[in-house]
Amino acid sequence: MTTNKTGVENGALAVVAEGVRKRYGPLEVLKGIDFDVSYGKVACILGPSGSGKSTFLRCMNHLERIDGGRLSVAGKLVGYRERNGKLYELRPNEIAKTRIDIGMVFQSFNLFPHMTVLQNIIEAPVGVKNVSRAEAIDYAMVLLRKVGLAHKRDAYPRTLSGGQQQRVAIARALAMRPKVMLFDEPTSALDPELVGEVLGVMKELANEGMTMVVVTHEMGFAREVADTVTFMDGGYIVEQGSPEAIFNSPQTERAQAFFGKVRR
Image (tube, rainbow, N blue to C red; front, side, top):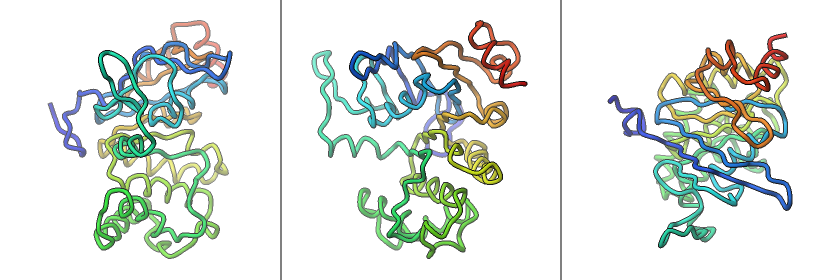
């Protein structure tokens, strides 16, 4: 096996979901999800609004508490410890520690408005991982050059375009040197002309071997970059497979209807 940039053998599983369930009161939004992603791979999750895909992604770093099943990311149970065959939820400070290996980029950029771009990026490495300020700044500048925004290090978020803010959000997530990156429809809040600059950064990350789980409506990105595509509807995984299989030869009527409309 080859080894990816996180030092983990490609082929080992970075994300493992077994029978994951989630409900809000009487409404069950995840109905027994089985899903896995290997290190070094890109998994795209597609489906109509309300299918449960964003909820499932948020469960991967315990922003949403699961109500059944098991979910592990980067070799650790997410939000829980197991004792005598039972799962017990961790304390908030313990949950925060388990998130260190998981980077997440949201639909809305969630940058701290009172901090500069550079301050946004170094905040967590310094405050959570106890990285020295000098080391954090050096790595932040590496990341800003990667996303094409080194010249904006002292700018405030309000002065940036949506595409620039999202690229800063990606750099901020990468600053923690995560083993897995989660993207929740990262281009949905952007004007169409700004989508390409964000997808370009994500493609570069994929080419470098970053493990990524991406909830997206960007079908072209999924076709080009994903190793596996998962189609969800109604809280279930309807189909999983290669981009070629899912886009060109969907097997279920529901997937055929969805992708038939997408191609029009």
